[in-house]
Image 1 (cartoon, helix red, strand yellow):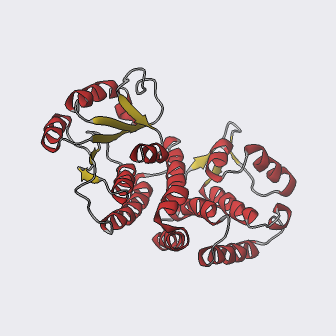
Image 2: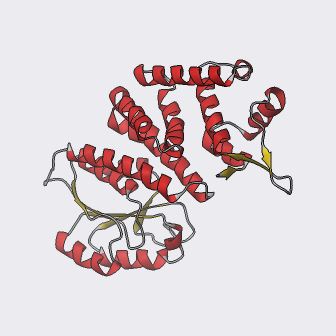
Image 3: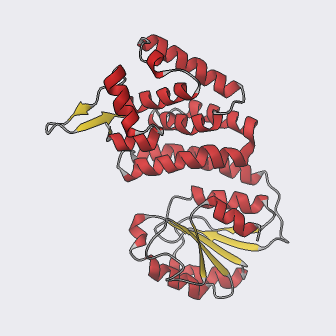
Length: 296
């Protein structure tokens, strides 16, 4: 059983911690569990319950009414709202879906994941689905990973589903050999390639010529690849915590290997990875940064 602090719940549901406490005290919405030392915590079922409460609240249901429902009434209303959200376009649809994907991941429910994804694709298109559904969802998965509340099986389950969707979208795009050359890869030790695949899609959709080398590319081979292709841009991701401590050495090596190319590095803000330390490298912290580079 996974456990969460109230701050974890706030990050994952979007409901402020003080609001959760108020709902607990006023309506008995959920009852926190306590450790032997009297520290409050919550479990997976309570997280899913709050995610569903958030869904209902954004659909206009008042918390005072929600808390009076029986378990059967609550579940029935969730099903009705969920079905209506997937069938009809609505203002809060995208935000709801990002939260709802967490419950699909926790329950390893591929059917629910696919229903949310396909509905969003039909209503909003691929790019908006990625930007407003998948990307916020991945940020929440990152939170779960950081606090140690997601296991490898769940992460692999959802990563494989998303990876399949992005690759299918990439395959539907035509190749443009006349576009600017981009070499995309993950360095040795980086295995999570969804961000790189999203970059692949965005670049290919904008008519760029992409050489996709995938994950875990040995550092010793990077220079030979760049020398052969002579790209305009070299793009990689450095996000794995185990790589951050030695990231400066890796970036220095990449700079040396790509002297005739523009080096783009996607990373979290870091003291080691910034333009003061590497003035000739362009660091990106969001997909919007990459979009801006494409349109320069």
